[in-house]
Length: 297
Image (tube, rainbow, N blue to C red; front, side, top):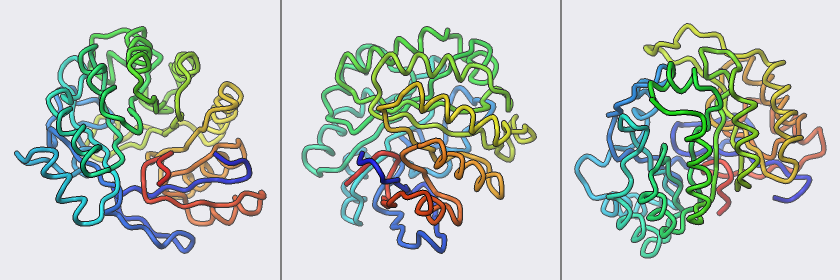
């Protein structure tokens, strides 16, 4: 990414409009779930709520659905879904369709693989993906209590190594406050990510969702979040770092976004009102994208 620029993203996961960013085309980059709203883990912070905003395949082949979306103007897809009991999104059987989507339709593809096994990682390496987006967790308590997984922290680093070994571009995510609002394993997650040369790092903030076990949780303060932004920027000085979709709304969101600009993050998804002007006041040139963080047509 070019020095002196900041990138703003508005993928089609939700409708978005501010006085500074009014040109979103929600059909350009579309999120698809291969499991509908089904997820075996029912993680305490999500409980399938995020899947509700995605387009289900509804029995269609993934290539057929992608063709319909491309005909309506889509240029990229996030292929996601719920996890099985081992934390894996069932992508392996869709790899032939993913290859066709990339080669025949020319769509940019991001995936949410969860914790893919060796066979899935190898198959994804043949797709020419733009990136694999996966949450990296640095605390065993969070894996067990929030994700309901029988896995260790080391498995998350093993997955980073596995995907990288097969040439899959890494777009890891760290959820700040994932342990019921507490910062717990985020620094260890950052250390693991730094060892594997990610394409981008995406930071998101716990956003308590109605109807989930964390609906009443209090996210970390803006000061704590800003401190982690500074720490991440220092740990990965040459890696693009993005502030992703999920974070609290209202005045807190604007404060978080300002701290992201101040820390030197390279991009922000769904920026709060006034943040484009704030970035320009800091000497940055804004660039706008109707896609996931880091996707540049």
